[in-house]
Picture 1 (tube, rainbow, N blue to C red):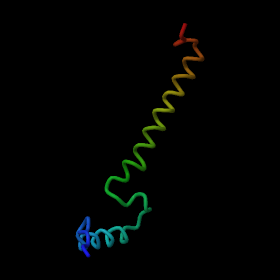
Picture 2 (cartoon, rainbow, N blue to C red; picture 1 turned 90 degrees about the vertical axis):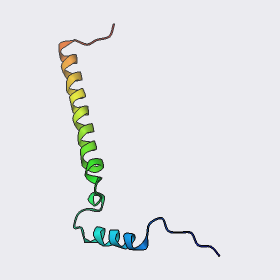
Picture 3 (cartoon, one colour; picture 1 turned 30 degrees about the vertical axis):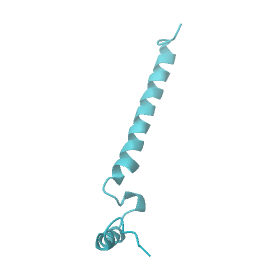
Length: 68
């Protein structure tokens, strides 16, 4: 019976497990790029939506930007 070779070496996997278990942060912030996906992108979406809402309110208040 043939066994498939592992995707990563066992030593590397154990090293990553020890690293992630030793970090005292929330699970979704443990990876190296997790701050980008969990913090920066939602903040950017919130900021852009608030800007668009503000622009819409300003345009409606002053009666500009209407389509004919």
